[in-house]
Length: 130
Image (cartoon, rainbow, N blue to C red):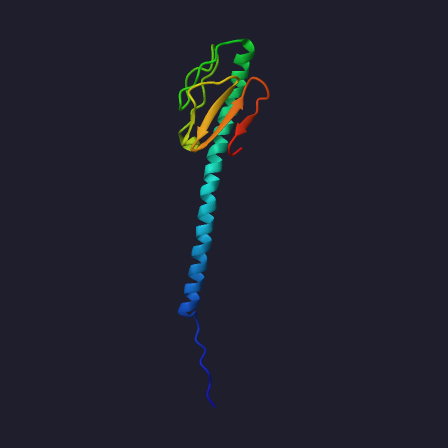
């Protein structure tokens, strides 16, 4: 009677299938991480704009002249007030203020998305991606 030899290990085809599955899963994860990075950058820029909108609301209520920010932040918001938070570096890379303040809101552009934060009324932010 013959005895069968059982070989231990995996065949080449089994290993290639597992590697292909791992490659597909890694590609899906990398794509979703890229979109999350963009959303995180937008969220950080929105938080910076919201933080300055409270200062601008104070300037607005005092009747002080509000100055426009530089594209990357900085510059005094109004008399005796703090400066605009910086954008375009770190977590807000690719984001910038528009250089004019229209009406009672400040506008920020992140990559191709634009949003405005109001400081005269509702103190809300609206725009693409929010």
